[in-house]
Image (cartoon, rainbow, N blue to C red; front, side, top):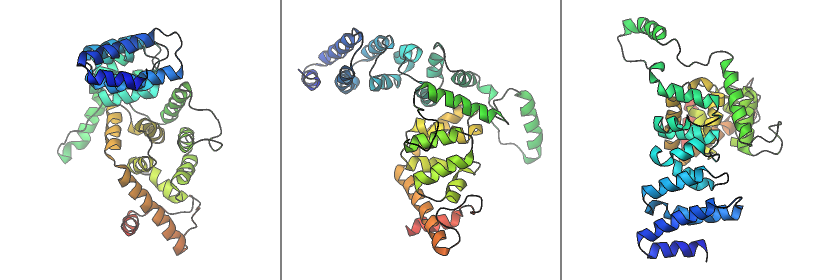
Length: 336
């Protein structure tokens, strides 16, 4: 009998059958010493369609059971971790299926409750531990309040004196952040080559060049990925804000955790505390894919326009090419 047959039985009968099937399937899976990929996929196919129809107690039971397993269905674990912390706490504390990227994304989405559970993990990455400490003590994060113009300088001085330990990334701290991100990615087993231009997918190339700390390497990879010239790619990463780069990554349809890793490597000072991560995730989710593609089409139109005018070749040298003019970008976008 296949997994689909089991699902149909559960759907046709009373809700109690779905709950018993959900629990029994996970219990049987947890008894396997080393489940195969096929068995893991079968469990996902069986349990995910039943997930919304089972009570909270069953979800809590399944989260506790899977937290003790070395091999688990990743999709089911991720779905459970989106539940309130009283359901998914065992997974947040113990599950090996959650890597550093997953933990950062969960903290960004769910905030302090999930962060406190994650803080109890053994061998927690120090970078994540620091983020959780900052989230636990929001008074360390300075928020500028509207004040009279005459008092702005004095207020800033008082705020700096009152919060001397506020998170900052001056000078060499940016390189430290990149090294930490690189170590996190290596721990996930995703970085397989030192040379970022040989045999890697678009995301891998962008990630590895961003982590080098050399802006020109990343700008070249971004230009290749978007099929734009170097000067346009350079302009996207030289703004004080990461908004333009956000649109470029959204157009490439990167997942939010992958986009975050690239942006934080290029703009490390923009993420001194967990609230900044949450703002990034909200912005990225609200940015529609088609709107991002429209922006990329505008950049491409500007690239071709400059080539036709003879101001610069399509494969321009970034040291000589001018920055992208926003007004011309808007006109090109309307034209396209």
